[in-house]
Length: 111
Length: 116
Image 1: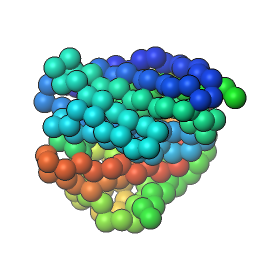
Image 2: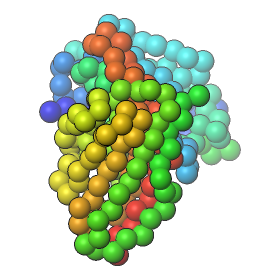
Image 3: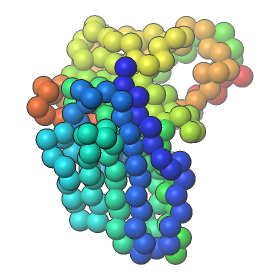
């Protein structure tokens, strides 16, 4: 079955710097890659996603890139702010319904 | 707004007890999921249901069962709770989508279960 590895497990950045979180997946049939953000004590929420027919997608300060050949995808956050501090989870899916999640990255933005 | 609710935020049970966790969604979603969240292990799928009375095992189904008698309600059952089932349990729901679309999962607030 699918396996998703996520790195780093923790990431500390200064406010205003960029943050990058990377994930690799094992199943070449995966075609949908969402990212969820979980703030402390809150439920995970979708922040951005990408399908395998697209190489990059942006939404304001966040972007996701996908390299199908290498089977990895990344989340990029620019101009980080304290409210970006959270746990971020990547996921992969072969059918858009059932997701396999990575282990999560704790992002701390220091002001 | 999609609303996913879970029956308890915190639950303390003794080893060997039968435990029921309930999840209700109000958006007529076909898919419902139960995950377990542990530090450093992410969100691991326990069971998945894509229709009433239908269920599929996820990655860690051992020690758990589920029930979906109505579309809006998905229950997770621990037949005989053990200490290694102490965890945060998250329910989610989403629309059923075909291969060319994607369904956002909406999560409940979670149930922190402690088994002593």
